[in-house]
Length: 129
Image 1 (cartoon, rainbow, N blue to C red):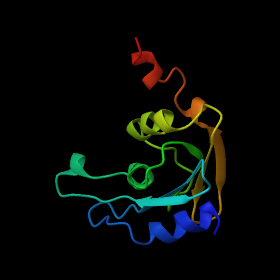
Image 2 (image 1 turned 60 degrees about the vertical axis):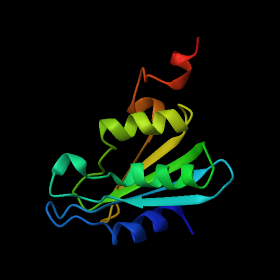
Image 3 (image 1 turned 60 degrees about the horizontal axis):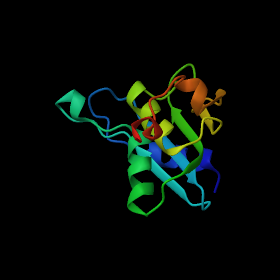
Image 4 (image 1 turned 30 degrees about the horizontal axis):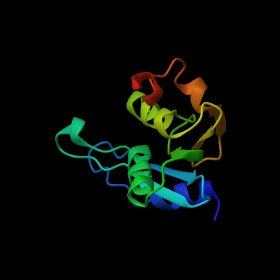
């Protein structure tokens, strides 16, 4: 299954009763495994979970720690990029050159590298002494 197909399928299961804005994400880990996540809203808006964060959590729970490719899809007129928090999460688990494809259900696509999404990212290696 392609990452786009996986992200599209999981997007349908998103829980977005308030915004109606469903997002799906799929990532491939270094082993080649595919992990998916969808947004989960909460009545206390900041307590929701982003699709990218859900996919990363599934990857970590499976014992993996490196992302090699990401796809995010939403129903919007233009491809949207991951939010700032998810950009930071991606930067912690992916090299700067890892591709992130942003897609719409209408077929629009945009690709950027993780490093271009979050230039000058604060990374774990900055904390090593």
